[in-house]
Length: 296
Length: 309
Image (cartoon, each protein chain N blue to C red):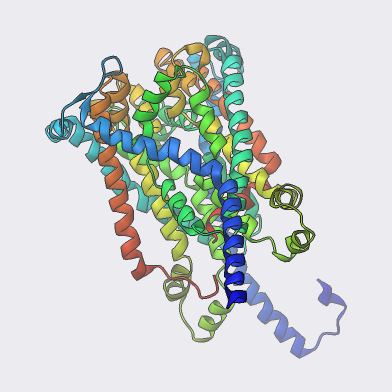
């Protein structure tokens, strides 16, 4: 378009057609790419659309034989029915409670350990690091039974202790993430403080932690999401229905209402939407955090 | 001489100080490791040699539980189901995620939008996601069989036919590959551009460029993903539990959804066979370690670490 003002010479004309040819090919290529990406994107989004659509259909519309693309009357009652059929608010609160406590615990314990591993060159550090990385591979099932027996002896079964307590000692995966981040902070930053005689803990709490806000945020978010969706641990430890989390509650709900798909989808939507909304607010930091995991 | 040894004492003193500091900082994890990992893994071995139902004290049975296990059809069935979902599932899911990452990596407008779309399903809690897929795969009213019918294919009875229950889970698994795609994308963006420029000059085809530049460069990521997916696949639990609801039974039609972790859970918490479950847990532990070891050992042949990392 900017070419319009330029004097047209044979040379520039030739160049122009050459350029056009190339862009033509490129356009075709990128169109093809977009076509494939869109098609796949549709496959990824389709289930969400189906979830929302079913959640506002009445039973007649759900089982109607030519497929109802858009119900004439939106049946919002599915949502109110779902919230009444299972103590939804109660379960949401329980889940939130467990998840937030886990975030708190992990954010106290994991950075401390990560700091020790990243910035204090003590003897045996590498051994501790290797053992820690090894525990990532430890299947949860191989510690499950003795832990249950132990909690049972302590009278903690059917309470939130077993779900929350381990977080206050740090999990290897999150410690690893933070260690990577701490190692990236240049030594020079803390050196002068060290010469001035600041204690290690002061350097940690007043210099390193404030510098690591994005990493801490990512870890907190990952802990939150993973606790929010966990099913197996709450299933094992929470016996009383009133104490259940959303995962356990929703699973029990499936068995009870197995043909009321509208209501089931409404419940699933209510369970999923908060996480997706959260994700949209913090997307950028989150993706950074995810990629931070595997690049080194 | 005195000066030198004085120095040595000083160094030792400094070292000891560092050690104390280091241990103090890492103590949360060390204590947690002792309580939540080392103790239970050892105790689990002890329990595996006993019969124990929580009410009576454990009764020593030696290797009796292990002997029983090797004659238990359900043990073999659950092992088979787990290996099936691991072997048939993991590699296609990874290949698919890599393909998506490659498509996204080439400069495409709206890359971040596509990335978000592919990532969204991984946020869905497993119970909710599996419930949604139960409905998608419903043989009569589900979207998938309706779509198949529209192109003239009679869809299978996904969740009821024992031959199709595990493929259903693997199909659902593709939906949740977004995390791997995002991580692969990051690895791809780290591959130095000049490698491709040099290859372009040499006239190497895209296919050749992929195998000689891209694949080796991202091989550490492939190793990492492979190990992580293998471990989670061996612990496959929630999705299997939810899908089994379609046939209203733990284990699903003809136990085709009885995964190892589900059977272990059932033995421990439905039948209170804590000893038997512990024996299963130990076998799982050994199998996971063996698989990881084999992958690490063979990885030297196909994983390439760049010089400056």
